[in-house]
Image 1 (cartoon, rainbow, N blue to C red):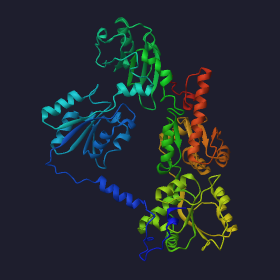
Image 2 (image 1 turned 30 degrees about the horizontal axis):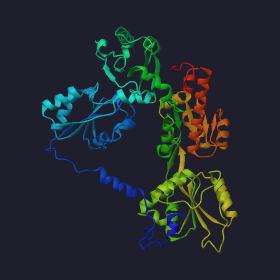
Image 3 (image 1 turned 120 degrees about the vertical axis):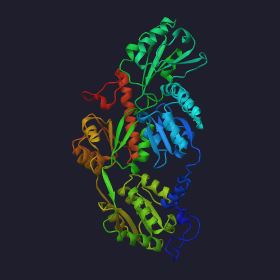
Image 4 (image 1 turned 90 degrees about the vertical axis):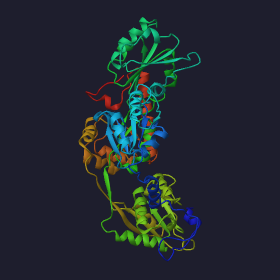
Length: 562
């Protein structure tokens, strides 16, 4: 039973939904008001003294940003950052309208000083940790000399973060000492740092791997000493090569910067502790043909498998041409015209919620109603709205599956035989036909229209047709038709994953080879099936002794990585 059905109540005379307790609405209007209060602090007077926060953002993965760093970004008036090295997800913590200055456009310390003296709250972002191979000493010193108040927010350093993502502990029971060398300026005295029992972490040596290895060997380290190099650490482009000092330069030729070298017996732990690069879909670029709102949970799941999701809408959801029908439906919902409301998509839930916001209603308007959802994603959208569905399919998550479990109308149990179906303008009549057979009267209301989306940008279209994507997920037959219509047919190296038999049939009709099909029609199951496919593919490459290559690297001319 939904919370509404646990506490039925009649609508109040003002038409703002039922009175009484028991159902707490979580509508968009309430959340917007709450967020607005939190996101709009009083403007500071320009006569107030400004401050500068020197903030580390970590070595690459935006998920390593600290809570303190995120809080500073949320309060910032001005952010100074090397834009090319900063993930968009980090700057997403900033308030709308914040001033973002690229550090390449001027002396960051001077820019920060001017902004702070103008009364602004300044955040200066550094890759990794500000105090390690970064600008804390120089820029902090300049701020102190200028009399500008500042504070330091440490970040996850590449020295610890990258080895952690590579599966290499810097210490163990036998090795308790770690030495860090910044080789970016050259001229390292390797005799002073080459202690045989210490783990050595070398940063800034991407262009001098051979000199680094030769220096350590000349200082007494055996040429058989285990050594590893990790490039683009903590990102989905991370690559780690395990070697020895003797072979390190040859084995790491062509690796990209930034990179970090680890020298010592602790490198031997990687075989057992590698967790990041061994994810089922590590580094796979996956096309998700859904809107950002629809794709949010799916993209999060794919990231958990190590993939890089790229959300490309294939349809655009538009309001109905004549909104009066929806207006009458919402009025009837509040006044008790219906026994059931059926939601066949998350878009239908969103359409009703938007109408509720227009009328000042919330989830309490569903008091006394029974609510059905076509599947788990739609049910989740209803729960977020504050409504627990009374009926969902027990098997196939579709209109057909819902029809199979729908109860017949019983005049002794059901005071009203009318069912509201707010749906898309192109919805099929299968469910309505079945409900009519069972004695129910259905009101099919156009809640939204679906139209083909605009073509994606040229680089996306080229990647689709040229094999730049490792996989594409098709969640319905319409996504197959629309994606091909607006962007072209995916390359034959791209793994095609579909949500069910009907979608597979459509894909094959368009000449696509179906590689993966979910065992049940849900986007979560589809992502899981793709991950299982990726894990099997990786295991087969390892067993055959082949280099680990993503599907996109199988096409002619693709860059091959180790």
